[in-house]
Image (cartoon, rainbow, N blue to C red; front, side):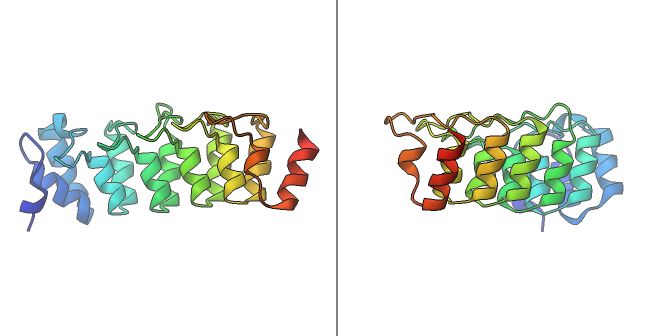
Amino acid sequence: MWKAFSFFRGANTDDLLAAIEVGNFQAFRKIIRKSPQILDQKNKFGMSPLMFAILHAQKEMVKALLEAGANPNIPHEFATTPLMMSIVLEHENIEVLLLAKEELQLDLQDQAGATALIYAIQRLREDSVSRLLEAGANPDLRDNDGETPIMYAVKVENTNMLLALIKKGADLRARDFDGLSVMDKVIDKEMEALLHKHL
């Protein structure tokens, strides 16, 4: 049954993934004690045990991995981080666990330059946007096209997220790498008026 998951190098890897998927804490702790070196090791798909636990919505196993010392910043092969994955999969409780880790790097970027904050905005996750901003996420970090989080908020036409970014000092005069400003991207008249009010 677990042959499909036998991609980690080292001992006890099949059992580790099996324990994570079903939430077998006794087996998990025994494996980690015996082979701690596999705690952050990626499989051939570029996925760490922590990412695997997030994929399977195993909140308590995510907590156990973090307590055992798993690195919350190790990305997928496409540079998607555990925090980004928790946002994409709408695992709010796991997102909160990750944000509680002091060593979590909020502003890591994927291959397109998107941050966890941009992921949350794209998916209209208002609570996630608020949590990320309160935790200190950079409201002006650009993606590979030069677009900032506030530009994404304008594109998805979400006033609440726009206001949250403005409150944190997001640059309303920013331009992307094509020279387009935040105002150039506005379609909604109400949002346009709101931006003018804060410029």
